[in-house]
Length: 413
Image: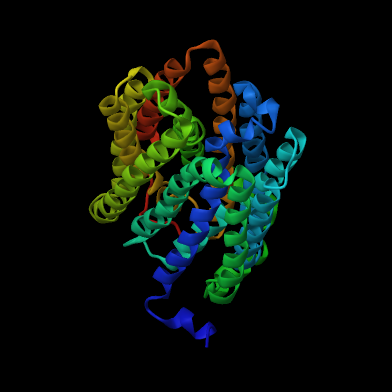
């Protein structure tokens, strides 16, 4: 009965819906920590120092980054369904365990385990969605999935509110239990996409070693350009994820219990708009011009540059809120097109591996900027740090427009 679902015309979109829930939990569980610092530092004094808190946030990113290419390699060679189900179960159990932590070292270890388990998800899920959806609706499908990440980021902002009313231990417990239960739902309904390769493709795949796979990816100059293009915007992307609640609280002089939901909901809703607009526009543009996805993504990144400057210098609600909305829309357009652009330059049997490496460099950039902004905050230059990040985005934008020139709308094996 369940296995027959894969033959239904609606099932590719059901896959997006199922993975949307996983994406929500993926970001909600990692994001809530950034909004609960005020409540947690009462019980764990080490969190009172911003730089120490930055280390706690960054250790997740370092582990996540190291594991991302490994996850991609595994996803291209095994059952993506069970990788997704297993990673969801583990990180949800870790989230529950964080509610039982009573010291900084315990939090650090659990945060590292979360980085390990969550790294398995994104390359695997995007590869599965890309296989279920053709080029005519690929950006929209990827974009809809990305809205789950943004929704999770927004709900993570309520961690501060829940911590203020029920306690931070309870907040972690509740979110963890939800994820564990959803893992069982996913195990029942998610079905692996089975390929129907030709005899020639079967012969080629049987000879495709790990070394050969990596050689095919890294001998492609376009992939190196895309690698940097993905990494540079990840600097402000991760800065927004990890530090925007703090920036809102300081710039607007409001408590974190209000700044957390306000900042994360603003980014989530605006990014939701961005991925839908960017997905639809990209799917249409690429039918008329081979670089349609690239141009759409570039327009999105262009919006983030003035937004970062305004976030850095703004001190009023209209300025800060407007900048956050502009950034969210722009970054959403960019986010919806990364995997579809990758599909234009990398064969389909290597997409998870390639995206794993993209995720790695993006996350390493995020880890560095998380610690860097923590130091800037301690030194009193927090807003300036956000403004400076616009320069990195501008350089990546120019590099992409000048040198990234795919030859087809979608690569095959």
